[in-house]
Length: 90
Image (cartoon, rainbow, N blue to C red; front, side, top):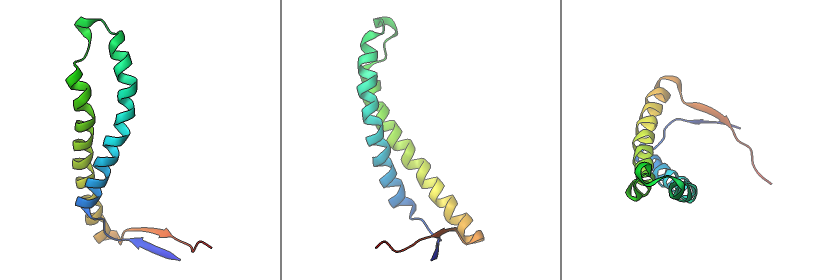
């Protein structure tokens, strides 16, 4: 059975992906914090930067997704949207 994705909710998509980007960035802190301890003090990034990076990643993900969903909806009006094939699970 063929279906078309004709509209994406920009705000809901952006909120969901912002949380997803934030959660994806948290494990990076587990890598970055030990590495930060190995860097000499004069070149070490601040602890605030490590806290701000997941938040910045989420905010930029929100804005990027909001714009992308809006552009998708515009393109879908012209083209009919992405066509997908779905089947029933048994």
